[in-house]
Image (cartoon, rainbow, N blue to C red; front, side, top):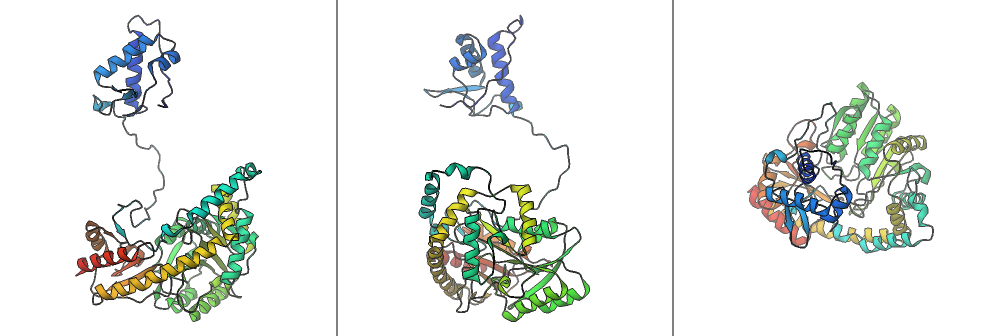
Length: 482
């Protein structure tokens, strides 16, 4: 068994008052009390420790026997000697020291547990079903990369904007699938869209700048802007998306630096911004000179007959910074996001990225680039989209079946979640606590409304649940609500 402990005991062979074996024993107890040797830690064999210390093996045996008798150590047949799992003196536990300096604390953003019981039915905020991810193909792509003769080249530093093959593949996808005119040099690959948003905020904003954001809206985005020193203005959302008439009134009295929007599938309401408001938003941006930060977090999953192209695809989109990700398309653990916009802005953002993260994961980037070039990502998107469309229909049916008189909702045109409003006032924090006791996890939505008013609604992600899980979860939700 591996003994990871590095011997650092100091012995005084000329000490007439303390025997060598007792010095060894006291030294081990001291390391236990300091917390360096934790309960269950394996100790070196007596021969190894004796050789390290330059003493007779019997001396170490005496020390181990003494500590075992005192309860500091314990032995396991054929396995060796370990620090006792139950120490004889609670004072042996290391004392925790508090920091002697001040620092900036940050609010925890995740509204739902990241690790959940396997039997828990989780209505998340709209995650994909990782069981559908092309894992075998991704593993094969990884293997091919490491079998290349020049694989050693990939283990050095790469470009801060990301692997060129991946940027070219993303640029092609944006051009052919989303109507955008991009160049690989205008794209910076990031570790997910949240990093892209952080880099955007830090590159774009100065303390005191004003940013408008949808309300209800995406809390991590708001926190990112506040962290960058921005003053926030909250623009309401209705069934047509961001209310651009309200935004125009704000523009007349306030100098805006940026407007953050999720126009394809608004978070959390899932509504798609209508064409006339998209055009109005672009017109206001050009008239008043503010940037539009377009977060297109799940573009591929749009199910209505008419597909909506990004704001960034419009010919008048000179002020649009476009953020998206492959995490929803492949799996959340595949941390590949990207940002594109005016070339000078992307270049400045890439330099900031170089300061905080030097580069991304070149092996993952090359593997994903290969899957995109071979059409595997595109085929996976079509397959997943068909499955999610079926689950969307099932979710719509179940909500009508179990909650028809308790809630109001519209089947979303796209996205991976439903926005469900309760007929009666409902504290979703209390509801979430009650549901969790019955094996169902939902997100409390009070934090999504930035004016402090209750939303009386839930965002129910459906894509990561099977039809059977969806039915069981909605049935329990209906039971608790009634």
